[in-house]
Image 1 (cartoon, rainbow, N blue to C red):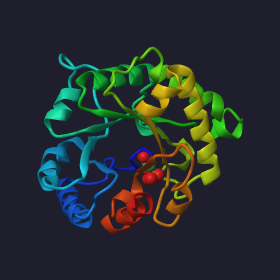
Image 2 (image 1 turned 180 degrees about the horizontal axis):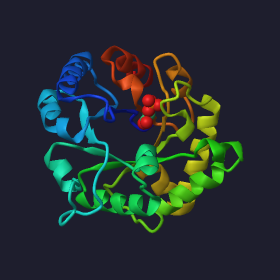
Image 3 (image 1 turned 90 degrees about the vertical axis):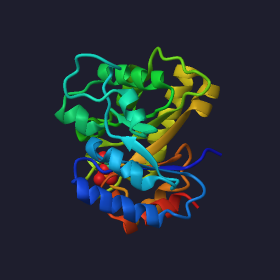
Image 4 (image 1 turned 45 degrees about the horizontal axis):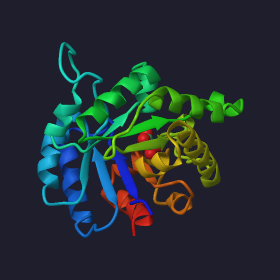
Length: 254
Ligand code: PGA
């Protein structure tokens, strides 16, 4: 059994003070956390202060994006090592909002992933998922396989390297309505089979976790708890309130 993980993505929704207030509430809520992993991804600017607040707590820190270069003339970017220096252990790579609004593609995502793995200290959370048009026209399976091939193809993983794949159907993100758990289970099966093809079943099972993301709340989380091939959740809106996020985590991590 893999350790369950719940990742909070605060996006660009909280200012510095709001981030620190919420971080304090989270630290208090999760003071008895023993099993599982809870990861919080604040904005870049809040990371160092939130890190100070989480000192002595089991909550881990993640970032929402990273540069594919380690050093150099990359104005406005943050390198993988800078993230580890600031205390991050996880980083989201290729979130659909970056694919949509910042025109990130899977070639870029592949390069970011390689740079992150090179640090040996950051675990990448690679986002994939179809848009509504692709779903409506029955192309979801193809899209998922293609996105996995583009982002992961040609990688060989060292013994200690792990990757989290976040299945986030774009049309469910921020919509207020998650997909049916059975649909998530089906998509995760496709992901699992593709990872088997790309890396072989042993590496697919030992080095990869699969999480679902898209409008998870304390009301619908139960349906996603015992799904096959599902190791946890990536939570946006519901992670902006400590009580609500605590309920979501408690449903997943006993
Ligand atoms: P949501 O966001 O939970 O608000 O739908 C999830 C995400 O974008 O990762």
